[in-house]
Length: 274
Image (cartoon, rainbow, N blue to C red):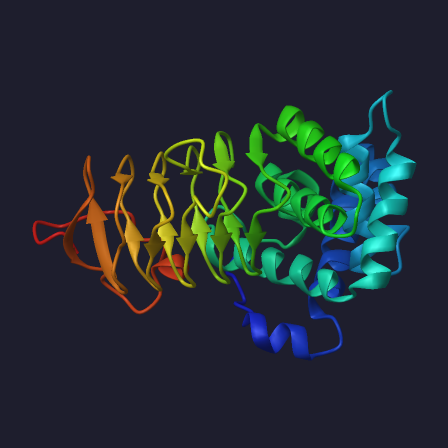
């Protein structure tokens, strides 16, 4: 199926094309796979807006005997009422997956099945709770998310929108880390510290960056906008804008190869490092 690419900024400025597409895709699934009708109706078609569908799916996955999914839904509703922009972050992340993952031809895939998308939205709730005087609830969400999605994102970490977290397994983000908008991250990435100092000690990932599988970025360093970090690299010092770094420790091996590596997702290095 050919993709019809949808620009993130355009999508968010119109009525709600993402939700309209998802509902249409859900109806097609029910027709094609009637055995999934109950799941599809409860996850998508019973809801009036995308926010409610996302909240339902994440709460369903985080539901546990220690804390019910209903209480998680209520916490999400509190967060969205206080900060309606959370819904725009949901949409931007869905568009990022659709645009950047060649295995995806529908918006509904990430909403229903992809733990990278689910882990990000769980973090958005934990981050809101953390900064609104509910730190124990935030840490609980972090803990459940870690158990369910195999990611570990500190609730204090700041994550922008339009994030593509592919596969997600082994993704670790420390307390003072920052990830700006339109970043793509593969599995096994660590944004870690270099010691036990109680200060700003984690990486700052600027917009448009692509972090390859297994990359480790350590310390209060900056990966400049639209840079590219090759798979398996260990980054210990600042990375300039628009370059590719690779190796252990990572060194500049060339230019990033395009204006926004996070969108092209090119993970191959040629002989010149580009």
